[in-house]
Length: 431
Image 1 (cartoon, rainbow, N blue to C red):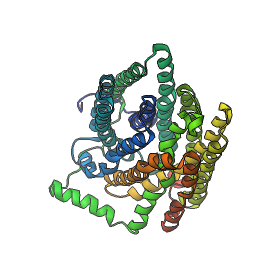
Image 2: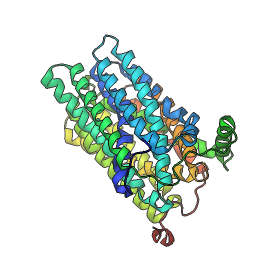
Image 3: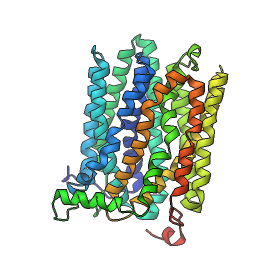
Image 4: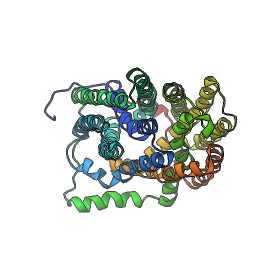
């Protein structure tokens, strides 16, 4: 792979496809699997518990993130892992028709999650190494857009396709088999495209100090945990999305469950449209606006407004649970409000992680940040299904609103570098 020829490429040629490719496996494991298991009559408690465990590779990926720095190039890792994800997607399709589909598909999702988490390390490291700092900040919105486009394709287009195929084929299993084979072919083609299209920055090389693998591991991790105010940093990474971690696991079941069980009784196709497409478009627009206002005013000035805009719209789900509107347009409108706020507020979190990762070990330290981010999603999400089963949807969504309080406390404890993320006249003149 390393000997193939590739032209010098502008970021627009590879950032959109790289982050679209980064988003698809995560959407498959975290969202598409939830819809699929719900279609296959798996309970909310089991769905929330076992799919939350799939966050674990993203939680512990910092344990092997230095290996991505120490061996081969980020480019090599990206292409190889995309081909590996393609193979895992094909394995899901092959195991779905079996009698033990739940256990077998979960096992394959685990393999896919490990491959995807490692791909994230390489892709984020490649992003940081391939561009100057002001370009990194400028393309935050672009990478977020492409990542969210993967969400539209996954939980929008593919969910709609699965629902349509269930009707035309008369089989839930065969519908999902087709969807996963389609994804497998796409990922093989994506890996081959990036083999040609990714640039070869001089900074993309194996980083070894000659002190031995174990000692280098210790140096990388030690440097991260010696950062000033590390306790406050970790609290913020873990608690910023404490409420959202619980909410996200139950949105799809809430939309699909019949009205007699407190849900909204939407079809799989309708969920693909209102949540997976319209909702994600709102999420994208919120993320783009978030990146833009940070580039204008800096993270420090915008952090609290973005935090409020992210959390207050959770009240929408309380209203949807209480009134259970029959109008799909009203449901879509509520989802647009909540998803826009979430996308806007989450951008601040991404930029904060970039600030924390600044330094010699950018790739590994950014991976550590995203690992703690994943842990902050995994642990609260595991109990979310059990809570909802015992509280019902309305009380559960009310609890989610109360659960936003820890993120406000954690935000009050952190320190943000003045002007970080803001485009300056000096940076704007760089090439």
